[in-house]
Length: 522
Ligand code: KIV
Ligand code: ZN
Image (cartoon, rainbow, N blue to C red; front, top):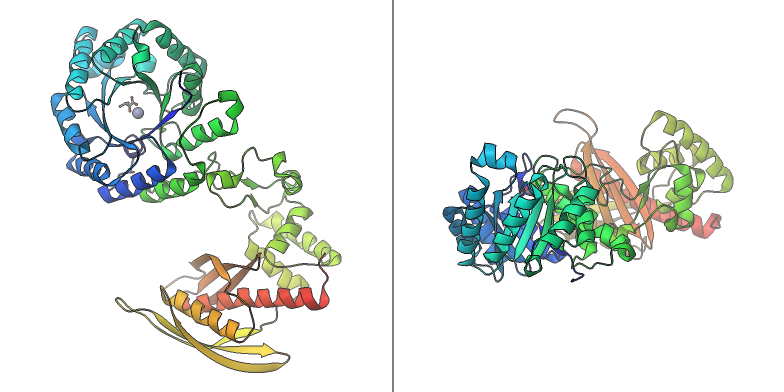
């Protein structure tokens, strides 16, 4: 039996069935291209007969996305199959995925057909689909609740009629891992021609068991898993791609299975899907949630600072997250605070750190999350103020639609109690970028800094209400391997942006002078 697990991504079909998640054809192409970069084997791009929009989306994906097999879903009717075949025909490699329900409940109440009739429809539909492609997947909908001997018969007939993949969906997320694992094993042992097709599983998450059931199935011999990014999908969703793949990776010795996914693309794909579907990822979601690599408890933070192996079973980098975070809150210890202070550019003496830790704990009792800006405010209030070596004297921006934004910025530079005024102009991708480019050039020319700081984060929010509200800009820059945060407020957001950037630069200069002249590193 082959060791490679085929990853069948149905984010654009079952995932799009999540309430409120509808995607335009262009958005589907954007996601599909990223899924190709991620390395999925098959992209189920949609259900072409369901709407003209979905037909166009599947067609556009088939024509524009290279790499994975492009698949469309169809019911067991000639019209569905023909529409699906026409939508996917632009793809280099394509698949028709047909399905019909096989459980007693579905056959009786939904289809109003006898098991014999369903068997015949399945047989004829697979044969019909094979007229258009030699890659046909057949799904026995609600297989998890289908009578076993009947399921074996349907699977045998579907394979005999030309199905190359047989999918066993736990459509309503009803099964539990041991049971589902047995079902797969029994199918492999009971269906005489089972070795002529790839056995696939498709698990829903109604009881939170979709990933566990999918993994139990591959242990029993299934070799294709149908899943979605962020686990989105009908009702409680589908098995999550990132959880499945990272389990196979992290527990490689246990599973001894391979896959074609580049796990470093997981986070980027998750963010893209979340933003285009407008479905947020819950903070504690495994692998891609904002807390997945964040440590709050003091004991954990201390452990992670000593060795990441203590509390991290996989690295954030392995899923494309740059670094793990230590969330500062009331459970955090001195060690974590010290590390964060260094990260944002402060090297305190031991007695200063003692004072700071006391103040930090007092604040943490009142406030749930302690952000970098809170720490900066504490240091400046309790320890010392950052001297202003550069401040804005004047600026002028010209910007508008169809023109390249240009900024002229004049700064007051103070050194050794002398003030100098200098001016520079630059263009950029937007007014803020132009202003930051002008500031960088001016400060490098005046030897205040030696290279351009790298802007790694920029946040703008309103700190009062109404049209004349004050905007606050928080910038984060990397400079010579350290990170510095700046803050600026104004009713003019460009001015707030400039002030914030200069505030971060003042910290860079302060940190450099402090390190050089007065403070030996701790
Ligand atoms: O959940 C399900 O049964 C499905 C089928 C169409 C495969 O999504
Ligand atoms: Zn489904």
